[in-house]
Amino acid sequence: MDINELIAIVKNKLEQEIIIENLIIEDKSFLHKNHPGNKKGKYHLKLTITSNELKNMNKIESNKKIYKILESEIKIFIHSLQILIN
Image (cartoon, rainbow, N blue to C red):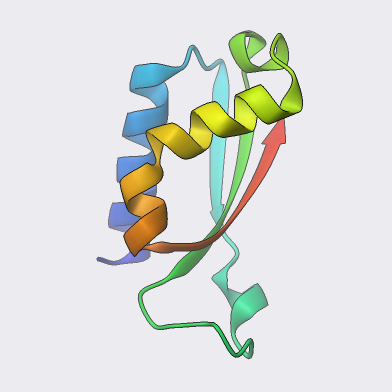
């Protein structure tokens, strides 16, 4: 899977499960380029989410919800996930 396909899937899944006012997904895979655990086909995504639903949760609850929604993508395609909630 290429990065554009992964971003589209992540966007779609999050928007189906969470009320989101704005969502920015950035490919930050270059940050892991020389790390020993870095593998081809595994990506680092940065999610910047504006969501009153998530903002009303504590940080652990909101992150757990996102990780649960993206569980299969995290197992296969995501090396690292950075989450910022506004």
